Length: 251
Length: 248
Image 1 (cartoon, rainbow over the protein chains, first blue to last red):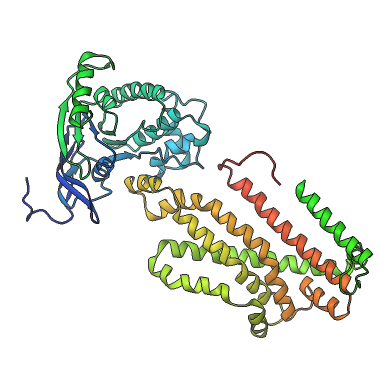
Image 2 (image 1 turned 180 degrees about the vertical axis):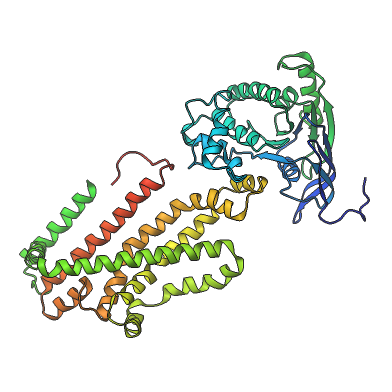
């Protein structure tokens, strides 16, 4: 751990092949402290969920890992990370295919090459037949799948998913959780999954990091050493969920 | 449908006022008299309509070029924004009838001063709306592009410019509607043809009906320009949901 004196104002961002290591990170926006010393690790291929109340700095943590903000103190070491913002951030004027291939366009691919690369995954993502549809014509679940495909196609070892299913109805949400689990089994990545839903965290993650209200700090880390796929009514899942809610202060 | 009905009522009321109220047609001609003048003087007015249309189209094109360049420059560079914004806003306080003779004096009686004055009237709504539109792009989409290490140019091209298109078209439609004002003032300050010029000579000859006929053509020109821009908008901005069918 670094002492206060050694830590530069804008902490250095070191790259790590595929894992994520955030050590004692502090971030403030003006007078507002978003994160007050958060430590979190994800080994390559691990899925780590970050759960906590609204406004506890969960999104800031992802921005830190993606290199969009620098820590005021502490250290961040992370492999190249792709962000899936909270609302899907699909561009309304692009087709589903062009939205999915956006990262490739930014990386310098031609439109045709980006479309071809994105199209290879459309069947597996249940999007076949909707290549030319605009986001407004897609269901909530489909929009999330396009956004997730866009995130995957960025080709980065680390995925930062910010409330990926927060805007979905309960049933679609459950289906999408199952779907994400299978998709990650096919394409293993290091995943930071921010959610306010502790059940989602326990169902999907290898480890659940629970944050306090703002300024966010880690109050407890739960290891979820359960086989997949996990069932919502599995006794171990229920116990972990209740434990997490208790830690977060649910009555 | 409602628009046609409202227009019909207005015209009928006007006609009745002149015919039954005994208004001197030198002061206010009846709509039928205006149409009569339009038909009789068609060979006189047609070249004027063509001249003004040409001036307005060139002026609008110049305004689009200048407006887009200014908006993008102000969007990309803070020093440029600080330097240009007061000038851009101040340009709208310039009274066109006052500077029109000066512009004519410098640039002569040809096409150039007309195009310049139309552009002066039109570039502001285009520049300001586009500038606001560029800033209004979804913050999440911007963050996404930054996380992908997109260049400033890529962010502009892939996210900000398309996001600004609806606002830009709003500016263009406003510009199209007011463009004829610039052309008329420019022609008043000195011209050999054009609808503004026709207005001036008709007034001088007490041909009130012909003056109204020229005004009617200006009115139709503005509507046609606006309609053309709205049509273009529908073709280009085809992703925003529109409320209900019809409406026009």
